[in-house]
Length: 84
Length: 159
Image (cartoon, rainbow over all chains, first blue to last red; front, side, top):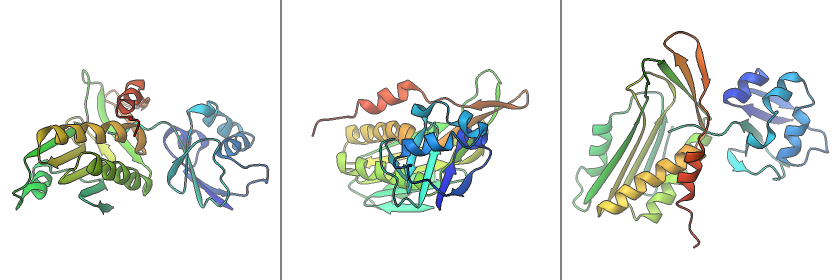
């Protein structure tokens, strides 16, 4: 099981802030994870429609979409940041 | 949650920020600081449209991301002290959202460090703003600005 956490409009559109899911073996990278989640339902598909915009963090560190996610304890998906 | 790395003090908190007290913490008892630059970011309204901003953050990663930026700044600008505090939760126009206070021997390093920290914080620290409107309801999530990416890019260097 992998812990997924969502923030801002990604969280609102998916309808939850976190969940634990079993990832199929063909999910290797962060980009694969987004593609997989989009098959789980309309809410996911809408939240992640613009894949390139979605930021990914593995164990609270920023990564690119082609980064392998093997061994990740926590994977976060969120929109571009707007703090400050 | 608080974190200290080198000369940097980083905090992410719900409570209001006391800018004067934080500045004093950096300079009290010091004889070597020649420049203290403080940047204060405020919740801003335009024409009475906004009632409040809601700041969402990624607990843990927010502190780590700001901590990394602050540590870079201390090294890059040879700072004698640096405090970065970012709030989360709901805040009204006029309230302080973020404070960066950079202490150095000379003014240029302190000015540059404050700019550097803010430019990276805008694009790299996991915070998101949602607008709540005076007319009721939400104005939605604030969009990231390309100008912020450009501001960050100007610090890139080849070393």
